[in-house]
Image (cartoon, one colour):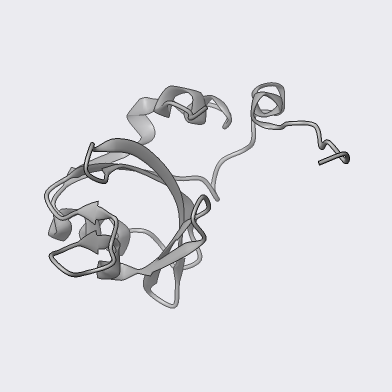
Length: 124
């Protein structure tokens, strides 16, 4: 059903919306990732597609390069491939605002995370 930035922040101890890096435009977004240390990972929320619907993806910085994985579509974007341009396969329009949260340096809030976990139905 989707999650808000606040609910995602609640899944980590002492994390609020203030901890999200908000930036707009391809250069500023890539700069935000450049500022992250190698091996870091987290969540990126962006407005994507024709109707600018909110979309949440995960990112990881490997060997100085950011890799973004869309867990809903199984698409993988490397660096600037994330950005949609005429004829490209990116998902985020270059002038859109995104929110980036680093999560590898945070503790999971064990009480709140259960909200995101569904029981497995082995009959499916």
